[in-house]
Amino acid sequence: MGMVGGGRDAFIGAVHRLAACMDGHVAVVAGALASTPEKSLASGRDLGLDPSRVYPDWQTMLAAECKLPREQRIDFVSIVTPNFMHFPIAKAFAEAGIHVVCDKPMVLTSAQAKELCAITAAQKVVFGVTYNYSGYPMVKQARDLVRSGELGDIRRVVVEYHQGWLATPLESSGQKQAGWRTDPARSGAGAIGDIGSHAEQLASYITGLELDSICADLSTFLPGRRVDDDAAVMMRFAPRNGVAARGMLIASQIQAGCENDLTIRIGGSKGTLTWSQEDPNFLVLRSDGQPERIFRRGNPYLGNLAKASARVPSGHPEGFIEAFANVYNSIAAAIRAGAGGPQAATEFDFPGVIDGARGVHFIERAIASSQSQNKWTEARFTA
Image (cartoon, rainbow, N blue to C red; front, side):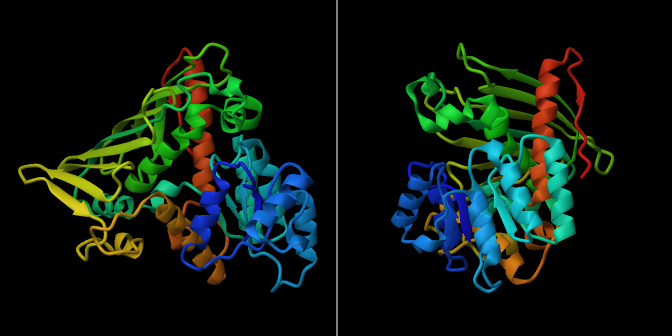
């Protein structure tokens, strides 16, 4: 693995490296780790990388790695830069036939997303997007329960993602993460893109439902802030088995006191399940006329995907890094198997370029709906 971004003082780079290397399937060997050559080299020293493979910028990294014999060059690149840099980097590496892992949201526009989908198919590269919450074992169990019909016909999907870290004008203090995430030129969108895209992907991954239309209300509570910091989206899904489910998505970064409160509740004709990211080892199923059931991570009664995603016995908590690692493990398995193209994500169970493109489409349609006087906005996605 090579990495672009994620050097000293970066927020998520260390998480990606820990996750990728957790199970011994991946080694970090190269990187253009910062926006300046000096900081990139210093970051490479921190990680103990060979100085000859610590590059001043991603363009130099791509050119140098492509000159190496195939068995020596990187197999894939992990892109953990601010959002506006995702597209040019991902496009260049994919066109060179190097597999790509990209942080979310994948790119800034649907036009860019469609171009990456086409390149991924043409070059037969593996392209993963780190919607890491789909890596939790109990999220996979929730998916199994929904897909097996345990809940009956899905009627209601409610997904809420509450954070409080932007409840004050943190960007004015010079804090790096707040600075670029509240800059529309670098982030593309505010809360709806930063965490709303996670919420949308979680609902899609578990239910398999397709959005038909949305009604969005995006707000900016802090004076002078240039992006939304709170979003509420009513959702109508395309019919399945004659039932058109309804939903609600909330993505807020101004909920003072909240940390990373992501919760999903899915209700069907037979029952309702609930999962919370802050208590991720449990999944609650309430069935009509039956006692409440609690599924616990690491037990033999779980589905194959949930069992395969756990590392330690039941009663020993697993969390964020392990879920992230499950995404990287699936991507690594696809690369080792010689898979490629958009279909690899489905075959090996990881969020792929199509998921990334759908997420970008959702962000765009939510912004359009919020700005429109005709509140119900068509939101169907076509890959």
